[in-house]
Image (cartoon, rainbow, N blue to C red):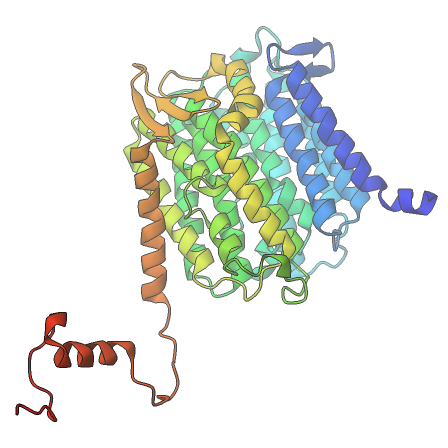
Length: 487
């Protein structure tokens, strides 16, 4: 009994952390809870803690980490939680440094591939130390101090943006850099690097240059990752870059500096964690041996479509739709067009060459994607809206999200004019356009299937033509058959 309990202890701890983060999010949904001098509990920190512990729990459910033991992953989640609930800027640096050391501590061989995986994390920690260190030296030792906003300037912002963007973007399109099997927990927890940038909204509003640079970086990363995924030949690389595209969506949403943009950011992070856990559960397994026969009556590629973003009301599609709505509400039409274009490319990169067999993990992830998409209004209202309200002092009025829990979502501009709505008949029709385009392009780009030698059985069209020719009232060609008797 004790041995069994000990083997399940990491999962129990991760589930307990998830429940604790949910409770904290509920307690801080109305107001922050400050406990000087160390702790500062608010909805944004609780939301990121929920993602960290929830992703860890799901990862332990679907597979055992290959290179990183469970205690390293739980330790990383614990250090990240310390960063999410503290008001001390130096403690944020220490927590991210400890998390990085834990996640890279298993790399013992100094090979070129190993150094390539470690370099972005080292650069990110160094940039974060410079950015948040400057905040502490300029009087913002506590993030909630009354005069902390005066310490935020371009020097701080650019280094924090560098710390955020470096781990979000794989340096090269190679399998070791993007494959979840190479350190599953590292990929699942990559989203946490966005927190230091989002936390800057607590200090005050951004200027236009900071917002523009962030959304351009996010939009450019979306295009680059989608093109890389579309042109990659390896399925693992394709799915990896399609997954990382949602981190770029989150970065672009953060750069919009609006409530609708932050809603897109939070939802995109949820989708990223779901896809990262799914890829981790699929890595290192034999899909044919793990194939789920209980759903054999359904198309075998259905989970791939549900996770591609091409099906309306699935989570990846709605993440893109929320960014489109936020960009349109903020008057950034180019970003909205780029979001649709990259969604099309990413969906094509996944569904053009799906795996030959789908394991139970893929089917469960597909169902979760559909459920998360249908319940998007509730998810935004319960998990994301409290963070938007508490960061409202640093946000602009150019774009807000309105939630009707049992109806849908809508985005509006600064004049409270509706820009996009979900779901409506018109919006649902526009959603179906993307699905039809993806399906049509898949059919056009796939090589023709060889039917083999003729079996001697007349084709259906030939039979119909013969019937129309011999039976005039069918409306076909009235030409007489060669053996027709006119007597």
